[in-house]
Every structure is written in C-alpha cells, then in structure tokens.
Length: 540
Image (cartoon, rainbow, N blue to C red; front, top):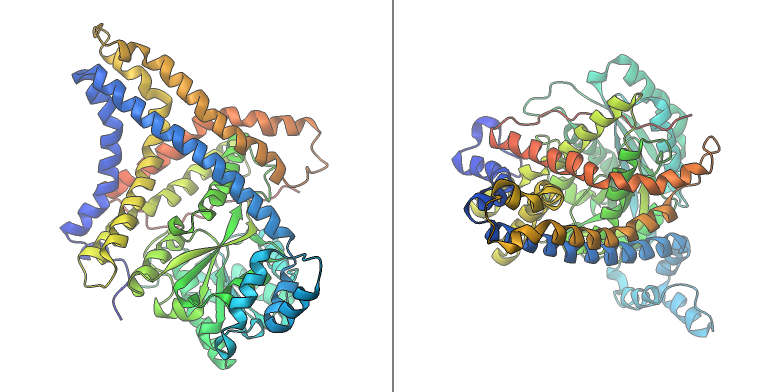
C-alpha cells in the first residue's frame, strides 16, 4: 500500500516546500497587484479591480441561489420519515406494490426510483439491517457539560442505537488522570445505551505525531477495527462517524446515513457529509461570532449543492473498510478532516467523492468566558481551518511526484479548485473592501485616467449589489435560528439582523487575515503542529 502520510519536516524536499510556499505566494501577489498597477498604470489597476469585483458579483448571486437551494433541501429532508424509508428498503418489492395501490404518495418521488433500482440488485444489495454505525468522539479538556449532551443526542436518535451503534469516547491521556476518570464514568453512565461503548485513551508523546485530533481519532479507529472483528462484523458494512465534543447530530442522522449508505454501490469510495450548523449557542455568542457562525453554516449549505466540490469537514462518515485502507486519519496535520479526502482520493487512485447528507449536525459557535478571549479564540479556530492550504503541497506531491493512476484531468481541476478556494479566502475581502481607492490615492496625478477616478463610485455600486445577494443569507438566518432562550428579550431578534453590518470587518479580520496568517507561516516553514482546542459553550 502506498504511503499516504504527510512527510516529516526533515523529509520535505524543495519540491514539497515549493508546494507549501505556493498558496501564500499567489495570495500576496494578488493583493500586491492592484498596488503595483496603481503605480504603473492606474487605468490597468482599475480594470483589474473592476473585473475582480464583477466576478464576485456573479459569485454572490450564485451563492444566494445555492443558499436557497441548500436551505430548501435541508428543511425538506429534516421532515422526511427516514425510518419508514428504511423499512421500505428492507422489502423494496412489497413497498413498491403498496405504493402502486396508494392514491396518495407521502414520500418523495426519488425514494420510489431508488426502491426500483435497489430491488433490481437482488441478493447483491446491502440490506439496512446489515448496516452498523460507529461513532468516534475525540476529546481533550472539554468539560462534562459540553460532552454529555453530545452523547445524549446520539442516544436520542430516531434509530436502534442499542443494537446498531458502537460508541468510542477517545480521550487524551495528556489531559491527566481526572480526564481519564471522567471518560470512564461517562461510559458507565451512557454506555449501556449502545451496542458497545468504550473509553479509549490516546497516549501522550506518540512518535511522529502532531498534537492534534487526528492521532487521537486514529488510535481509537484502530481499537474500533478490533472491536468490529470481535463482533464478527464486516468492515464494509460499518460506517464510522467522527464528531467533535460539541456536535449534536439531528435525530434522523443515523437513519438518513443508513439509507444512503445501503443504496450506494460505491460506498467504500465515498465520504458522507452531514450539514454542520453552528447554532447550538448562537443566541449567547457575541455579534461578530454570530455572523461568522451563521456564515459558515450557510457556506456548508452552499457546498452541499455542489457535491463534486465538497471536501470532508468537521463531522463526517466513511466505511470502516475505507478508513482501514487509508490507515485512518493523518496524525501529522491539524486539519485531519479535510485532509482525509485527499488520503482516500489517492488511496483509490481518484475514485473518491463526498456525498452530502441533508440533515444537520448542530455545533457551537465560539464562546469564551470573556469577550477578548472569544475574539482571540475565533481567530485561532479560523487560522486552523485556513491551514488546509497545506494540502496544496500534499496534492502536488502525491499527484505529480509519486506513481499513481489518478486521472490527470481530474487531478488538474481539483488542484486548481483547491488553489482558488484558499487564494479567494485570503484575498477577496481585502480587495472588495479597499482596493477601489488605491489608484487615485497612490497616483493622484493620473488625471487622464477617468476610469480610475470613477472607480470608487463604481465599486460602491457593485458592493451594494453584492450585499443584495447577502440579504438572502440574512433572511434565511432568521429562519434557522433555534428558539430564543427566555433570558433574552424580544429586542435580541433585532440585534440578530443588525449584526450583519459587521460582515465586512469580520470577513477581513477572520477571513483574509486568518488565511494569510496560515499561508505565510507555510511560506517560512513555521508549521502549525498543535491543535488548539476552541472553547465553545452554552450559557446556563
């Protein structure tokens, strides 16, 4: 089996280092280009800025459409009777005959198309009762009041958890004996509700591992493989979900995942991605964090409507067999979730994609004990996400400098999309917010450049249109909010709307700056090799 792990620091040759430098170099070049052109030719600078803004205007309306589409699918799928659909899979021919005799069909039309295709598979089909689930919950220093509601949400699922779900609470031994004791107590309290439950302690100072979630989850995953073998289960029929300590899967999550997994003939070559929604404590978080949490939630909705562009993020699921084939998650990166896509992609020579599951996994917005600590913690979280730019070097190394059978065309477009995503993350907020003034500020004597002098007004009009696309998000954000806690008065709803005036500033500080920070560290080989746990809590 090919080596899928990220090279150690002392193993990264000049080609790998160029891949690490590339995202930051391009991002800084794009930011510098309007500045340089303003000195050389204000007219050309103006044209560049206009084209950049027009491209983002088109994107804004595309995002607005896809936000609406994703929201519509999410709300419809949350209302579906997934247990009934699973029962239909257990006997598809009988279900189809029953439907044929019914005047009113209450389930979606695609369900009956699925039943027809599923019934035609005969003995080759994977029956839903053959599907087992495993959940790995990596923890570090999170308190019981954060972890235990997450475990309870698994037990509250509209699913046969007692007979079908294995639960592993993966704790870090470096957190101390109290953490180990708490983990064992939680297994004693909640474990009887699962098919099998264990607390798995990840040893400290494992060789060639960064201090992060990947090593913890991988250690638990290897233990899971032994448990599954002892139970006599087929790893191809066990689907493994990793969740964070603050994640609360929707009650239909296991049912929806079972349905999709059983139908999918390529299940070994798929990752399954529910919709992360950062809404658990949204009413309690400060306004800048609410904007970012809501924006990130809707970005996940947008991504779900374009499966060919999706990557693993936060909570995700894969078959145990696929995880075993990739030796589980990387232990050398702090962004093991998104990186797992590339490990699987190269393990199966490009035969891998992400399948959206249109049910939410509710998560917490960033919330520390003080306002300044919350602002800092939010930046730390987003710089960690932005560190996914390190995958550029990995993709180049695995795709172009090691033998593989990945289709060249697919590899090229995936590389370009990965680059575009990280460069846009770092550059777009800065250019949209301030570049329009550069030509006339830097070169005020360019009186003959009419376009440069008209640029601020034109840019303002374009930004107004872009804001029009964002209004869709503002409207839908009010629809997805959980009920307002009694401790807040009705005027809190108004603040939930007014908070969006902070979007430009939040996008620059927590978008551009966070991405540039991570990309610049990669340029100078100052690697982020510690997973900084973000404090996220619900006020009592």
